Length: 371
Ligand SMILES: Cc1cc2nc3c(=O)[nH]c(=O)nc-3n(C[C@H](O)[C@H](O)[C@H](O)COP(=O)(O)OP(=O)(O)OC[C@H]3O[C@@H](n4cnc5c(N)ncnc54)[C@H](O)[C@@H]3O)c2cc1C
Image 1 (spheres, rainbow, N blue to C red):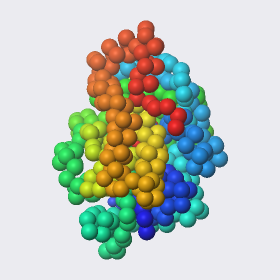
Image 2: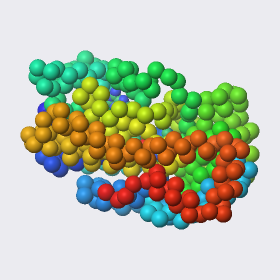
Image 3: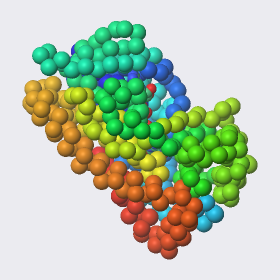
Image 4: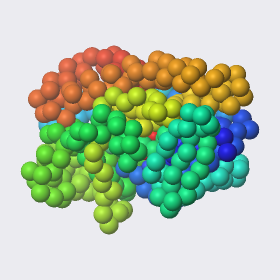
């Protein structure tokens, strides 16, 4: 087998489709069974559309919502609005990832679901990787792509610095039915956090928020947090009071870290959140995961075709990754510091109201071009 991909989110599934189209033999290992929900705001920048079309995986069949306007509110309910120059679409990860998974199967990708990679080692003499699964099986691959998301057991094995520190952030997600424009994405700030609301398929909405563990600890429970903190923002009070919540329980994740990561660890090429997570406020993580897959697939195919050796593969991929995503991640970290803090976000939104061009500039700084 030539390439093994760890993780079947957007980065892993797109890379699998891309490599398969280039004639590469691919195995993808995903620890869960499709379809499943993920904590994600489910707004995707249109910059990904040409690539999805090239992969023969355009989202139109899933009937996503088309989103072209942004509204940001401060914790006290002050508002700034702007058109989204490139725009985006809303589709649940439940549908989108399942769609890509089915295409991968149809195109000959070997997909191991319900299987967890527990160890990856590189054998210098064989110039290949040995991959161990939780059930004890061992696989060999010439190239391994780490597309296992923001945090996994493997980060400990690679001694990645961010894994040593606890991250203060957690996130909560629901699907809703609600009376709200389908072409608008709203970002509502509250003390120590922000919530995104936008349309997805089937007349539904995704409602997802990021906050700190401290905020939750102080309030005790998620309902108390929503009632006492989120609902101080009048827009969020309306959502929480009027929407029909479609899950019995929200999806919750914690340990969300925006710390810098290396794009290569022990000869494993990293992609998507495993290479670096942009703050959700920017709404660009999925586009980065797909763009990272495109970069990785091109470099891997050149290596497997004998056009470059392993040191060149690694240095070129690392360079390309940093050039493409480094500046976006830096702007994202700066923006993250502004929002969620009541006084700062009041000032920021108060100022941006009179300077809409700055909102567009921020969007440009955190988004890429169509690829
Ligand atoms: C609260 C929040 C809201 C967000 N909202 C948006 C948004 O609106 N728009 C946007 O563009 N981005 C958003 N993002 C970012 C976006 O969700 C991610 O950037 C994107 O999902 C990254 O895709 P990925 O393929 O790298 O990782 P993932 O989608 O996380 O996939 C990783 C996969 O690897 C699997 N895996 C992990 N470990 C192993 C293992 N050892 N063996 C086998 N499989 C394994 C996991 O089960 C998972 O399926 C948001 C993020 C958060 C936290």
